Length: 373
Image (cartoon, rainbow, N blue to C red):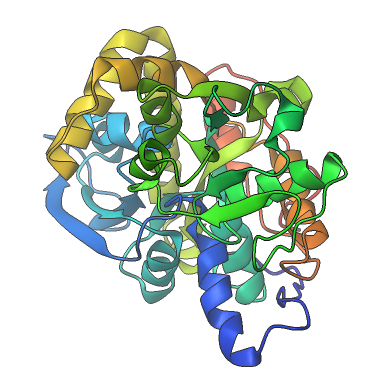
């Protein structure tokens, strides 16, 4: 990313020693509040009879989340490996954004599926030298789910305890922005104010809801559908707040050095993701089953029908990175007082994606003026 970038700094009032922990929190958008441990699944694959590209292996990182359906299905069905021919696919799964960004920076992975906050922070922190966004992957899949006994309207949220995954993560920023739009006041750091924002790991949010310690949560899938299965009600789908009801929740990123050294491999991976997304759209039930099988293989548990069915429907698979919404999400974080305005010029390089889309007869996608020069 050759464009000049200013590293986002946390606002005054936070001690310098706390700056890096909070930045790490902001990077967890893709993990949705999971702890920063990761697991190598130890698998690799290669398409039979294929021609090896410029790299022996491409290392791909992603999360065992439905919002990473492109990776789950593309790996599970061998659709990405098929495009790579004799170049092997090695995969690694993560539970939090910071660990995936560290892996990308350290060369443990070459390409990653990750959320908007880690994309922005990883790019800005490295002054535009670490990564580029090369494709979109998913939109939507975030909801405000509440206890219908205590919250019946949006105005009833005032004075209640609402969970978000972590301080500064994508959903936390979105909720803080929504609260601000309502004219209510909340201190972003403490979560105290007209609404109590309770930062809660998604793994324990359903239990917190059942115990009554929270009145609701602004969370991604499948946590939102897990809350509904426990008796919660969807009060607001975040898609309703965005133009065309679309906003980026998962991007595909690549290390700059790998992109420069192995553009043929990156292009092959993108052919695989584009074909995977097309297969998902053409075969939604098979794709849902494939994603659930991948989740079971990775985590030991598959999602129950009452959770995966509504969750799957709320996620839109897309090749378009929805670049304008990335800028908006960064602006919301600035507005919330979590970071100074970052310079995102050069964060996108959609050249190879648009080449693949054109070859597939699909329309090209735009970078909202944030592309590499």
